[in-house]
Amino acid sequence: MSTPGRDVHAHLRRLLGDALLADEPLRHHTTFQIGGPADFFVAPKTPELLVAALRAAHECALPVHLIGGGSNLLVSDDGLRGLVVRNDCGAVEFEGTVAHVGCGAEYLEFILRCRARGLAGLAYAAGIPGSVGGAICGNAGCYGQDLGARVLECAVATLDGARVETLPASWFAFAYRDSRLKREPRVLLSATLRLEAGEPAAIQREIDERLEIRRVKHPQWRTEPTAGSYFKNLPLGFQVPGLPHSPGTHRIPAGALLDACDCRALRVGDAAVFAKHANILVNAGHATARDMLALAGEMKRRVRARFGVELEEEVLFLGVRPEPAGAAPGAD
Ligand SMILES: Cc1cc2nc3c(=O)[nH]c(=O)nc-3n(C[C@H](O)[C@H](O)[C@H](O)COP(=O)(O)OP(=O)(O)OC[C@H]3O[C@@H](n4cnc5c(N)ncnc54)[C@H](O)[C@@H]3O)c2cc1C
Image 1 (cartoon, rainbow, N blue to C red):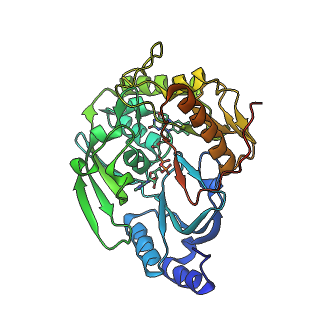
Image 2: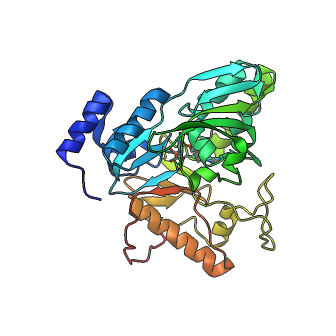
């Protein structure tokens, strides 16, 4: 699709006002700090404004891309055509042990608000970056637990903003790092989650423990740009003699296969494998999406050649994929 003309820009500005940004660099909105410009960008703070943005894009025949914290995304160097909507709707209300949370709420901030109310059940996830909406879309989790298990229902809008409805948890078909939203996109406005009563000091202790484990084992994404685990762990039942399973999940971690293939020394341009974890890729300077794809491609190739298994990306690619450059990446 070509770049939209001035009249589309003017019309969209009339509909959305000064909140509308044009040619907004998406590297400012992803934890990889990679991504070319979005034709148009808005970050609505209420569900009403968000739905208005969806309707405006529809009226201007522009494709819509939804993002939260951008912590599970690799965005094309060419950016994205159409309107990128970052969900900034983060209002939270509690009703006993049930929370109603705007899907733009930062996940850690929400976990801390639950702790303050004496509500337990999410402390294990402290340190997963991004928004509640992104975590529901990808059913984010760790240590064998995931957010989908806490969802009772969600308010969602259709991508054209024409309809808002409430969908029960069963609609989402939550599975390991997966939900139906990945195949049938809807815009998550708010979620109703089931928590349980807990003691704030004990919840805080668990939060502190989880944050400390991540501080030691993971890159600090604000200063070492990353999107966390690049590949999903292996399907249930896949066995490799001598390789361990992840705690709580009964899956062989992708990192174990990548280590067996000597992937930690790999680098393409400024796209590098994190020194402490073979399944975490980092932007070590000015990496491009093309670099990152070439590095990930080489890692997949090695695992395929050695184990006959195809690693599946956990990080989602947005935009048009570049043609492979053809040059074989080298190990630095
Ligand atoms: C250091 C680090 C550690 C990480 N650790 C973990 C971990 O332990 N476990 C784990 O599961 N993940 C982990 N991640 C990955 C990532 O943080 C999670 O997947 C997170 O839940 C993504 O949320 P987000 O708001 O950033 O989503 P984004 O990356 O912005 O978007 C991801 C997907 O969700 C969709 N989406 C976002 N918001 C909405 C919405 N409101 N409605 C509909 N769709 C929406 C987007 O369209 C996109 O398809 C880690 C990432 C980093 C950088």
